[in-house]
Length: 259
Image (cartoon, rainbow, N blue to C red; front, side):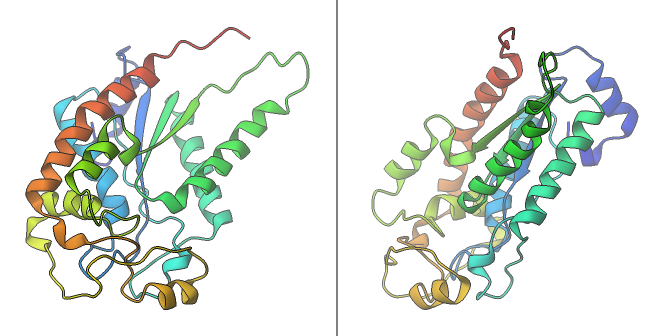
């Protein structure tokens, strides 16, 4: 079930259905930022959205929110088309999403992330949200009526290894052929080509926006995205689907210890 394509009575009924995943919801989250000369700017939010939507089509019990598509991308701002939030804004927005979803009865909120630069701030946002409950006075009888989970799509069991085996040379860490291939599988009419040198981009640290552009003029880090294809992207999606469903089900059915 996709929340944005559902009516409120449908969501209400799903929450009351008593199914294994009835009170669990997936939030695809990413970033809108440059991905080299051939990668779509939406790559980091498209990948989790593509995988989550494909899982929902496979298993109708899965509930997916609209995609949280703007994240932490200030280091990419020297490249046109990048849009970013400040860390404080990002954290506040995550807190509001969680408050909105839990108000209606969702108890397990699974953030499927597509941008490594989001991780630290999402984890900090989770810590702030939990702090509201951790500081309750004795006897600490209450616990949050929800659990939050962060999972990068490439960290789903077996996926990263599969991608590295598919692209043993030139996978890199940004504008990777694996992430670009996933977007090409979903949008084959948007496949891009470009001439770039060197074939495999250099590696190095990420600092501020202007320093990033100076170190990595075309935006790639350690990658050769020309290896990406819609066919390879579909293979990655097919690998990620069962891993996501298994991970999501385990999260939904985890029995919490008694305090």
